[in-house]
Image 1 (spheres, rainbow, N blue to C red):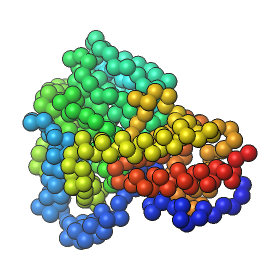
Image 2 (tube, rainbow, N blue to C red):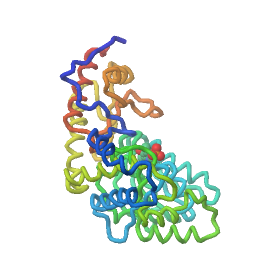
Image 3 (cartoon, helix red, strand yellow):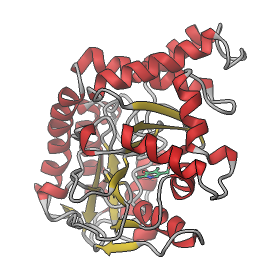
Length: 371
Ligand SMILES: *Cc1c(COP(=O)(O)O)cnc(C)c1O
């Protein structure tokens, strides 16, 4: 493979296009250094840290125009730990899952393993397509995935029956449209759409969900305290977490939410901006003879993570290796999907101009690597 130096005038200003962890805005990092000085290394039970928790909670409520009565739960462990919490403390007997990629599959595997639950009711869809929501008689949870990060497919969020709705929104939250009234537990980690670091989970919790957390916790089911949703909720209501949070993650996320509010007003504003950015990537791919969006159905294409197939003339691994050597990183396709593919994050923190520059760099590299 040739050693290629991409001309500097083609380079994006910021070369981070990973789908998670994702670009952290340098301005947010500078703010962290500034305000973090009095906050990092101090008690998470005292005001300086609790004020940052409250700032994040209030900011998220404003961004999502959260319905009255919804809590903003904050807990340690990321979405992966939260799946376990949901299996312990939210699913009563049986959950419906829509499995259309790696992440939706992982939550399905968690409930399948839980001996206190019935086997999950699973609707499968081929990677790159999206499953249709349908009523699930006998299920008390509908488990949706707002954005299947492994394939770049977005799922529309809706209620289709009386089951409570849990949405893994880890890479969709903050950029894909949602009316929280259609959800009971809308949860996400902060290292994707919120341009922060890993380790924390946020969940919008409806009054019905909070009531169910309490009912299951009061039953004779064993629940590890670390995963107990009632404990997490009690602490969140006091602007705290049960155990020690990553305060840097908290501050970076609060910075990002405030930036989104200031720049776009609310989620609708962000979503409109995301549509424009996604057009840059999908439009570019559609115009190239050697590239095409992996997701055929335009309405299923994510506006947060784009997956672009390359044809056999252009090897995606070579493109990615060349980009990386030039400081443009993390657009590898999802490993287990095993396609000749670029996967490009378009999260709110990632600039439109940088996405344009990314496509120019790929053009430049592909021209030189094509067989
Ligand atoms: C990244 C991701 C996860 C896992 O998040 P962690 O914070 O690493 O636990 C879960 N679901 C989706 C949709 C994701 O994109």
